[in-house]
Length: 175
Image 1 (cartoon, rainbow, N blue to C red):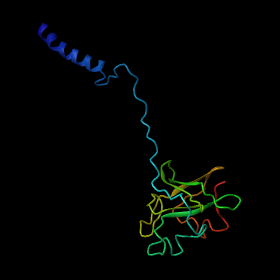
Image 2: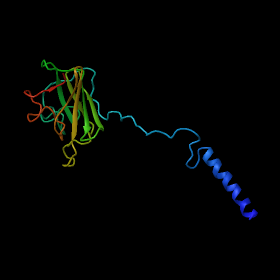
Image 3: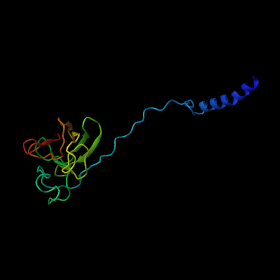
Image 4: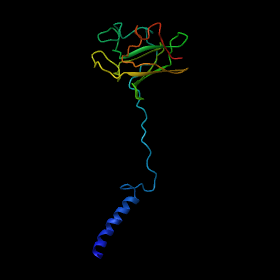
């Protein structure tokens, strides 16, 4: 009997030292860690807010400019113009695109001096010519000096200044 007891003592000492030092299942007397929180990822697509662009309010993605083979520099995957309620362009607004029904930001686009926002980066959730036909879509929030506005409805294409969306009669208003 004494021989079996002597063999168990080192195992008990080793096990108790693991628990005391925070090893297997032990915490070493400290509180268990809280949930891991991760900051939101940085925006994946940012237009150039410095200076101004041109053709505010125009449909730059369907007019033969910022499309494949078009005259404009770069193929835009999302673009539009933000206005103030007075009708003037809104140069210091941000258009935030979230993957539909999530809080995952897929793009954050700042307006430039002409009120325009645009990107040539691929935006998750939006249809791109030549890409897959099925997309999840995005939810849109416009942040302006007067507060935030949420756009109702699911958006699947990034050409915001089109006749079916925000043409001259239905502008994107930031405040």
